[in-house]
Length: 501
Image (cartoon, rainbow, N blue to C red):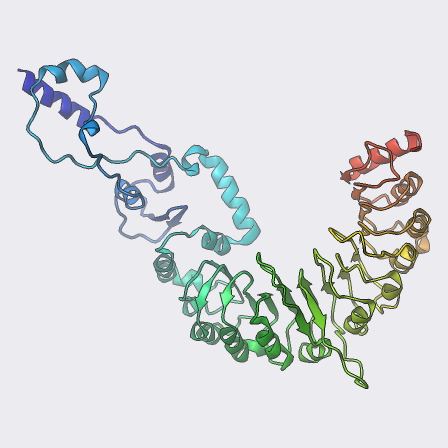
């Protein structure tokens, strides 16, 4: 009777229901049986489609995306009986050897099983609201089957994809789905390799409204980019590039007026900095891209090509509103270079010259822009051997005190008296109106407590104030203040603290 009892125990063990995991609960909540919903799932994304279609059993879907557990080898791999069955199993004779089925793995112990559904829905809702559904879905797709999965998604959702305007593809190889997105206006390729010229040209032909292309942090042959610009350059408005040895060829196409309507151009370095300086013909770029509104050359070592003797100044950038030349290391941007870039830009609103230690207040004073709103002159990580200007900061504030909302003088070497005169300009704005200043970075400067107190009192809209490493301030106050309450607290402390010895 021992053998039948053992078989009965094994049958009861097999018939016992498997404990429900959080994933099972997900499936029941998202797609109840008979609802007609069709679910697509990858390693880190779940997509619920309203279109009915055949769906695999849930256990099969889970098993397909896991690596099967290999059966253990050796004598020590024998299965140990549970405590409750040990006496009956011991009394039963050993059954004949039979093939042992591969046990089904337990539920996936990933982060999706540990976070409540309500929190995940909130997180995904914020992501979709910030970037849109398609960039979010594109970031979620991982694994070797992402190409086939997206193609299948395009085929199932062709009516919806036909309205798609912005698309981000990460770690893409070769295939693009331009034929499913005829109204695409913005395409971002991040971490992509091996994108061919034919693929980009086909995309340009299929998407007649495409005007923005972001290729930062992707390895795309310059011939492919040039071919794309030759096909779609007349309608291009925005272009983002990561600097490499092939950037010169792409810039050559821009200098040849292939993108006369270009409004945004950004060239930045990737993770691996390139030590070869980029030589930029400033005047040729002004002629090739006369409609440029935003020019960013970020963290680059670049040299302006000499204009040559007797050469007339370039036409400038009459529509330029933002110029960013920020760099973490010393660069070659001088007053003369800045004048060549901005001599014809009266509408400039943002000027970012962080790291440009050769720029002086005298060079900024001669610029034609009168409505500057953001001025960043911070010096970060520069060498102590550089000779910094100790005077001239009042030139900046007196010229733009009525419009400046953000001012960054971090690391500059202006004297205490010079900074006092510069910041006093915000206390006497034209017409008696309050100054627009809301962000002030004085990190590492020689600003004094009385000057800080005056600027806080005179700028009621100040919401950010950085006083880190200010050697003339009392201890305990050398930090960054964020928000109106913290800034006002700083003012109270300055008014009641004794002067530093």
